[in-house]
Length: 98
Image (cartoon, rainbow, N blue to C red; front, side, top):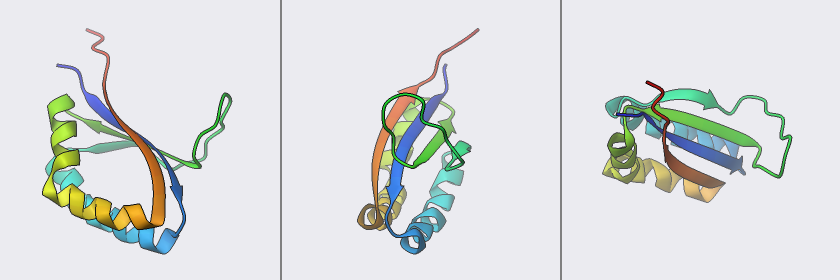
């Protein structure tokens, strides 16, 4: 079964408030086995336009990625993020190479 990913492009308007979101999502990501592959590092946009922050989070599979997003714990963390940032987020199934 292929892995799945959250791919997010984020504009943070209030870094202090965003930090509260990051702290709130830590437990839920641990519960669902999430692993950060990209977490807001420097980026070079070479085509089109993107938000300043990119995040890629790996999950064991599509079902787990969806369950995490829709969980009550993540919804509580999301309520902290939405007032202080704008995000485009997709849940994407990975490519099975074997």
